[in-house]
Image (cartoon, rainbow, N blue to C red; front, top):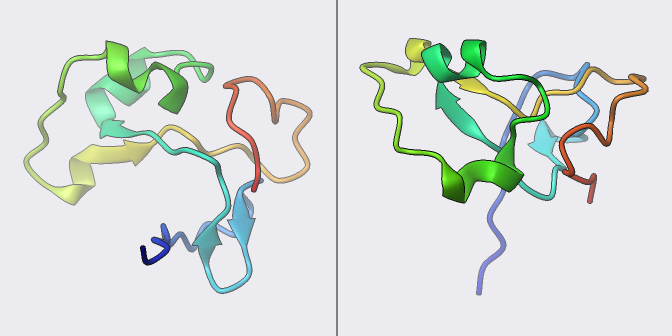
Length: 82
């Protein structure tokens, strides 16, 4: 099985890695509406419990897994860095 990569250019994220690759064990991408209404700790570990969140374009989506590099809150959501 071929390894899949999530690409991300947000280099001030805790999970960012060389080559613009996301090193998070899981990620959550949702609609901006849901992302703005949920606390930071709501992330990929709760994905199976949420209802689908349609969006009309990529501009209406957000990555909930972002944690600023150097932050003390790197374990707020239960996601780990690979």
